[in-house]
Amino acid sequence: MSGIGYDTNILQCTGDNSAIIVLPPCMNYTVNASPEIAANSRVAIIGAGITGLSTAYYLQKSRPDLQLSVLEAGTQAGGILQTVHRNGFLVELGPDMFITREPEALELCEELGFADQLIPTNSENRGAFLVHRGKLQKMPEGWTMMTPTSLWSTITTPLLSLRGKLRVLGEYFIPRRKESSDESLASFTRRRLGREAFDNIIQPLIGGIYTADPEKLSMNATLKAFVDMEREDGGLIRGGLKQLRNRQSDTTSTGARYGMFVAPRDGMQTLADAIVNVLPARTMEYGVQVTGVQATETGMAVTVENDSTKREYDKVIVTTSSQITAELLRENFPQLSETIDDIPLSGANVLCMAYARKDIDHPLDAFGIVCPIKENRPVIAISISSQKFAGRAPDDHVLFRVFVGGALQPNLLDLTDEQLIQSSREQLKELLGVRGEPLFTEIVRWHKKMPQYHVGHVELVDSIEAQVAKIPNLELAGNAYRGVGIPFCIRSAKNAVQRLLGNADA
Image 1 (cartoon, rainbow, N blue to C red):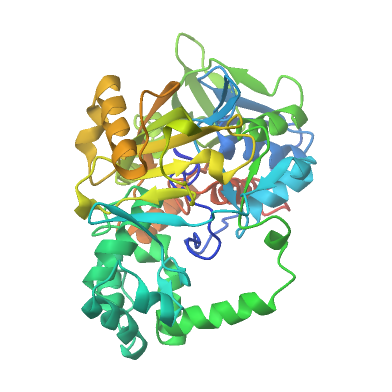
Image 2 (tube, rainbow, N blue to C red):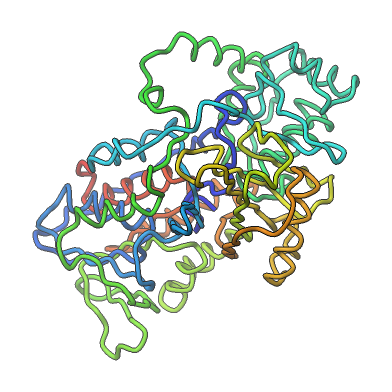
């Protein structure tokens, strides 16, 4: 709620390499080169989330002569990368890991000398539960998000009726779609795999990643790899089997060294701190609430709350959430602001709840739970943090993260803290046999932080980029445009730097 705004996929609650793999948006990244930036130019980067910090890092790396200022309204860097240490627990209030399948985050860690701080998911109990008719059922083996590659697991899963299983297996014979226009996740999945597979498996998995309405979620913007699989391989089963063969024969991928998902040993916030530590002194400016951006004859001006004078820069890169970015541009770039405002936003409440292991009846033999909307439960997903990564809870204790709200249950975002705690305790008790009161609860409300990539999002972002290309000295980057995970935020930062430097290496 990736990057999270959510700068990453905060709701990617499992770490099962075989069951849940976040595939990239696979959109084209345009680079519109601007004239080479003059020596010693002043550059303002608005926002110190992972996108803004990465922007500063790559600018400094490519052009150490530049005078950089990262303007952050808060008191620390990292945005939604927030780690709390409490009573021996390591609590992530934002994203708790990133995927290595997309290389940008791992490459940045290696450049920083931070890679030795990364730990993989625990090797035991990988996988996810899905709630089905009030009970927990394991995700079928051999399913990679939307690609069922195991005949046996499809036949034996209790998540589908006999009719539903036959419909999934029949996907092998369904002809590919002839149209090339964008399509919603719901339409694509029902067409290829049937309604049961969509309702019972795909919707909760996607909901646990994007907090999205699948009737609106764009396949081209979020899961285009599966669209390409249908077009190029003839279907999901055919394409999944092909990918499975390729993965089994590929022993050279960088991610294989670490596992599909990794996290910093001491928490995600330490990644933000590592970037800040290599930036030049006085780069970071905290407590600076930017209220507007406007063009000048020689560059850009930034207005700051409670500051009567405008700050002058040669270049400005805005890396805030789409909501904040639109507001900053509203007065002086109204058309661009209005277009950015067309990106819908969702959000979630996250409850981090600690328990003694003796108060839990369930064996906790998975990394988490995702819940279909059809189950009518007030929960999107439950991540068992202490099962996923080492060092997240003291011995004989468990740390849960409960996600509530999202695009399909926005009414739950307004529950009071007391209501959220009571509701989450009930879900933990019913699903996992958790008894008693939590040792503590940390609640964070990430409202309007997750950009929603609706059908037509690719074209919308094309329009945004075309407008920005006509404004000298201004660049945008962040999770609202071409990918919500941490690697995609870093990629967005690198592309913005390349454009700003006139296509120089970043």
